[in-house]
Length: 278
Image (cartoon, rainbow, N blue to C red):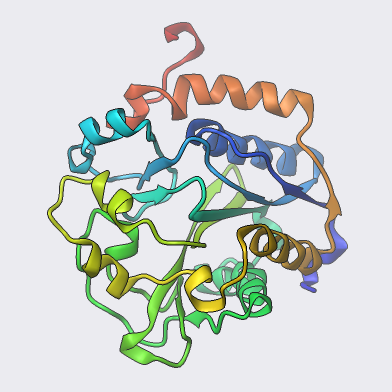
């Protein structure tokens, strides 16, 4: 249990939602943490499968024809890095939202703190995972899972495999009005062809599976058990109570998803529409 456990926290094991709404809910949770002092940890899935672009990623790296044909959503995150294909089945995502004055000001210390329940959850699943021990060079920069592996925030398995360790989770942080938001993607199962297909690249599936591993590959447990285990670790970490979104939060998220995270102006050019422009 973290020193943050004395605060008011809720654990949301969320419904599967479209990418724009999932990103909007993070900003809404930040407002709730700031205004009401209620912090949030959650586990969630993406429906339909979604490509989330890094904040500064060039939209030209996307194969828009494939995304349209396969019914894959595209949104853009507030965090940097490469794009992530969040498969409806193969990806498990999480979010941690807390006021900045309650967490370490040093970015690396904050990563260490916020990744504690993620690493704990993976260990409970039977996955020998930890922060990468060594750096690995980028294979394909537009894809988060094929970028360089950074010991600061990339989680690999098996933990003691050195340069042979494979990435299993990417984690990123940003600050929104004095609130720290960390989100991450954990590979439950691999869909290399789908993951690479959303990009304009000729990188092959074998290259992807050489670099990336999954919970299913490492531990063999089913997805439902993996989600439950991660949620339990997150909840115990901050002593959270089981919770849900408020009606007003869902309403605010729907508006934000429409004018920002689901809008072409944001996805392609990082421009946010005002309400009057919708």
